[in-house]
Amino acid sequence: MDFQDTPLEARSIARQVARGLRKSGFGIAIEKAIANDAPLRTTLLAKKGTLHRLVEAQAQMRVDSVLIGLARWLGSRGQYAELFVASDSDAQLTGRTVRQCRDEGIGILTVHDDGRLDVVLPARNFALVVNLDPNLRLGNKRTAVDRAIGDFNSGERKSGVRDICEMVEKETDAIALKAVDKGWLVKHRDQVERMSWSRQIEMLASQSSYVVDKEPMLDPVLARDLQALRDARNLFDHKVRTAAKEKKRDLQAKEKMLQGPRLLSELLGIKRRIR
Image (cartoon, rainbow, N blue to C red; front, side, top):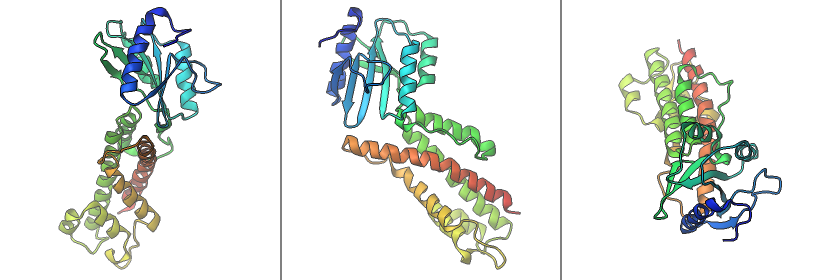
């Protein structure tokens, strides 16, 4: 590998990382920027499908302003990319470095003598970052929503989507049961308790479920969006076969992570109006 700018002491680390990435199906470019206006040419620029993985190899692991600038540049452009720092497994890794990397979405790789790579800290995919709308009224659910979004942004996408779906499902159930208890519905409580989430959505959107003087709490658009979110729980149940399909699935998951808190806020508002 023909390095020009990489320090001598970091080149063996770069070679080992490159071997590991090639085994995982990535193509490798040396000391190449992801774009002409990128603030840094990382040691390695790997690509598989449409995913770029940028790796800065270091003899002593550190996070400086240039690396942070690259992370923020990737984030500002929503690049479908991950940024890592890589060093030897014997290199000192301080708590401050870990905190900086976590805050900026930079992953940490360590290389062992046998060539094995360990992901000490997953990298954030900057195209998949979800930012919660601060105007949403979420009450005591905000902490749980923040936690789910944090999991999603850190790479735990299946966990994040699952938790958001579960929160919205529980709130749908809570609305249905409160409506029964307040005499808004013609159903009995035990009937509602036995219903699936899908059936509860259908019931709450149907005029025939309500007593004479009450209108459906879910309009057709909200009911449709809730059913679509319900289907999102299956996004990660089946293995994707290509990088293009993986990207499509991940972007769908991001859409659901943006949609979920909005739907939860709407349901909380509906529940407050049941008296």
